[in-house]
Image 1: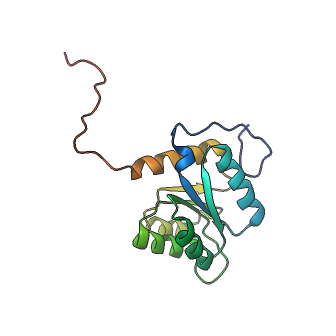
Image 2: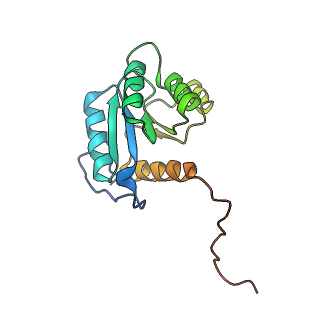
Length: 158
């Protein structure tokens, strides 16, 4: 049985990233109960939730206050601007990676969201394992690449 944000199951595996506790995640969600549940899940996975926002204005306040490493972004928000507009602004100003976490999968919404080059797009109710994996992939994609490092050998060349 899958575990999701709406289900009562709490089978969670910590993210393999040993520095997960240092990763600051901003939750952007206009439904208070869902945001609180998501916060609990992220903290159980070892992440630091730097804040919760429900509108573009509150996103700006939280970003200035906590400088998140990653944003989980709902698409429908309180106020005039939606999560896609907010994601575009955040990427263009501070280049913070965005993972959309939404109940909307219609073609128009997907096309708008994809134009912001998100690091993930998860549908609610989200599976905890899928959320953990999406965060790990997004964080890995943002790691700086060292030009001086050499890849580890996976075997010998015949």
